[in-house]
Length: 115
View 1 (spheres, rainbow, N blue to C red):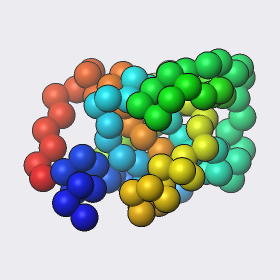
View 2: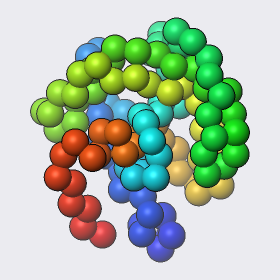
View 3: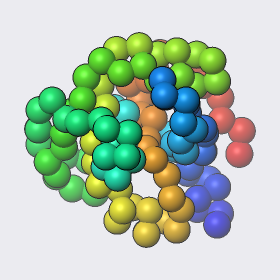
View 4: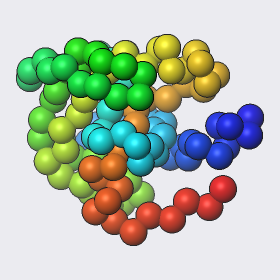
């Protein structure tokens, strides 16, 4: 529990279709990630597939461009979503989440996380 509390901060994010999703903040992640299962449920499809290397290794990632993400009334436009299967990570940490807000969004705003 301490590990999760220390390294993850959960937030709720409402996409244009007004469904509330659970995301985590990860300043070590370069971009914004959406769970593959969530993307399927929302009808989000990848425009292209690329190879990306991260903390858990190298994987093929689908990219989906030009999305708007709303975080507490702050609308961030033209966001590229990386569609990734997050099931392994969910099992490892024992939490279910729909995606990750990464550095590309966090660096644009003054972010303070109190934990």
